[in-house]
Amino acid sequence: QVQLVESGGGLVQPGGSLRLSCAASGISFSAYAMGWYRQAPGKQRELVAVITSGSDTNYASSVKDRFTISRDNGKNTVYLQMNRPKPEDTAVYYCNAHRLRFGVNYDYWGQGTQVTVSS
Image (cartoon, rainbow, N blue to C red; front, side, top):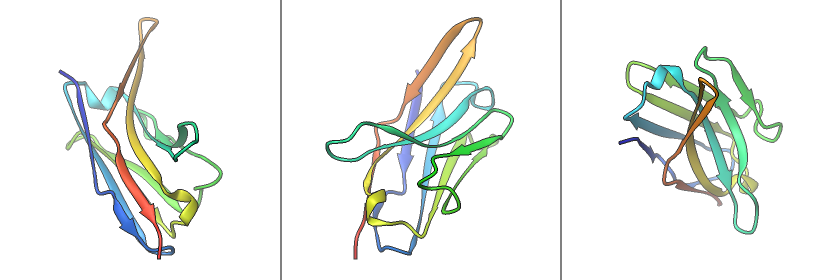
C-alpha cells in the first residue's frame, strides 16, 4: 500500500522559514519524480516544485529563489524548504509521487498539510 505522509505545516510569519517533509512508503522511491503542489481556497491546485529521480529540479516562478526542494532517497523523503514566505503562499500543500513506466502513469498523493503565512 502506497502512503505519502506530509508533515511540518503550520503558521509562519512572513519572511520566516518553514520546512515541509513527505515520507513515502510502498513505492520504489528513488525511481519516482517527487513534487509539491498547493491549493489555496477557491483556486486550482498548482505545481510548486518538482525533483526528478535524477535530482533535477523545477520551480514555479512565484517561489523560485525562495523555496528549495530536495530528496533523501535513503529516507524515502522529499523536503520543501520555504524561505521568506509571503501571505500568498498560504495554502494546503500536497506531496506527489509520479512515475511513467512502460507507458503507464503512476501518481500518488498525500493528504496535504496546511501552511498559513501571517503575522
